[in-house]
Amino acid sequence: MSTSAQSTDNLFLNAAITKLRDAKEYTLKVAQLMPADKYSYKPVPTEMSFAEQLLHLAENLDWLSTSYLGNAKPILTKEDKALKKKEDILPLLEKTYDSSLNILERFDAAHLADTVSFFAGPKTKLQIINLVNDHQTHHRAQMIVYLRLNGIKPPDYVGW
Image 1 (cartoon, rainbow, N blue to C red):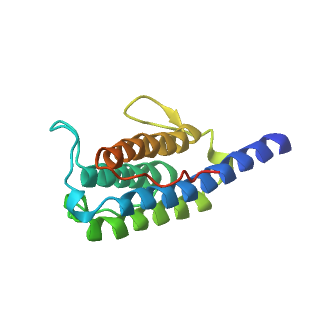
Image 2 (cartoon, rainbow, N blue to C red):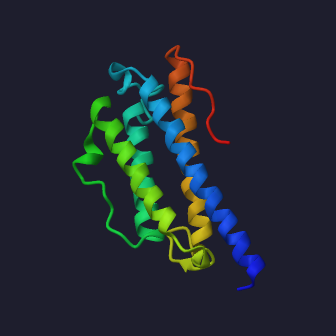
């Protein structure tokens, strides 16, 4: 790999780490704003509750990071995935972000082009990193709507 390609790969990886740190901060702010008694809130019966959105985000973050980027055992347990209370979910969410950040910080940028087998077809590890960001953004945006539907102003955007 040329020096220029290495530099670009490192630039991408460093930006991804910064973005994940910012996503952690922003997502935790969103999660903290919803009152504990509204964690079961669903805008319609077919949607996930606020708590389920957070757990789904955490589970996906854990799965993608450990399975495709870190070759590690997922940190979330079956019991974790059944949590319903704000006071239980917030520390779990923070722990999941910290684990994923640790994996990304140790990731070797030289492996960004490596291909992994994925249910949607072969993907590069760079694509998996992009998916981590896209997926959490998708679900956090839904949770922001949940806040608004409950008359709660969302936190100012964090992501620069």
